[in-house]
Length: 161
Image (cartoon, rainbow, N blue to C red; front, top):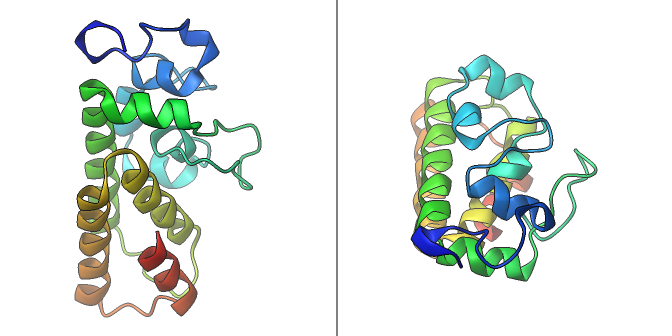
């Protein structure tokens, strides 16, 4: 790990796109973390190739082939980096605001349910159980507040994540 929590101090950033992204670089489309979390809700809903960067997982994305895959080295460095942890917290807060401010996903089946599963699992892998549980609990409170009918499959994924 480089000075100041930098993820790129040990290896060239181009070797590890996720770590470079969390270190202030860009995703495959040339967007920074700050740009993405600054998007209005309509952009969050319309774009489908950013969530894999904000919340990486060890499995390849079926929805967006070629998205980054979280390696164990990535996971360890991101978890140890104060800057990366802060960016993940910011992304989680942005996505939670999106889910609190919008109702369209509060239906039995919606692509946002997959996003929520990804977010919870990624938070658990990188930030730990507490961050993942806080996000999941906030989502479940929103579902309860809305009286929404979410599929049992989605609810099971959220619990397992």
